[in-house]
Image (tube, rainbow, N blue to C red; front, side, top):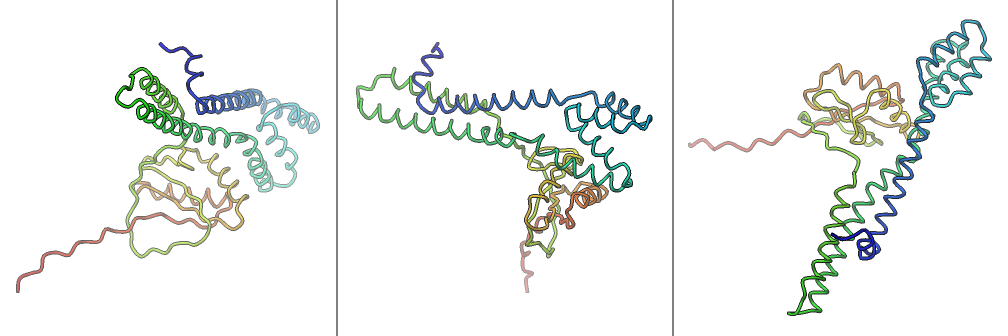
Length: 278
């Protein structure tokens, strides 16, 4: 059984690159885990404590509690307290704005993890191709007197790269959809953002299942980053209920998207039937 030093010594530069990518991914994962763990609080106990203080009309102490408590929940409650005298509608808008500001903090470094997860398989494929090239060169140099040991060593390294490739998780899943068919529907030339809904009513954004609050926050972030008004493209299975689409339309409107189009497939062209004899 080959030892770890043997694999590191014979794996080449690509193996070290894969190990480096894996190490960076582990460091980022641990940092995000510790960050979320430190921001985790007992929300119910925290809200009850703030509510008790506010019943005594001690706003300053309530704000102090929010500032001393880590995490997005405390910051949202602080925003609500500061906007308490501006009406219910203004409080709702302030909470939505604060929620949009919290999303980048929660998603910080997640794009880096996704990039590393997509880079590692490419490195594994590169190592596999280079290993095959090395194998054929050895066989060509040896001619009819090729020994099985060096060839088997290279093939073992190829299997090692394939194993590392199979262990890497690539984000994103395939959403099974049976889109409705229609003809002569207008399209759009505006910047779009897509949301999928499967037959069970599950919503997907960027090939990942999401709940409505998270979808609203991510759509709001997309609106804030877009240079022009966005149009929502609903990739809805034809079994999705109409009420579900109405709910998605209202959610998109609250996130700042005014237009929504339903993605359809063109109807299949019927083949001409046999000509009747004259």
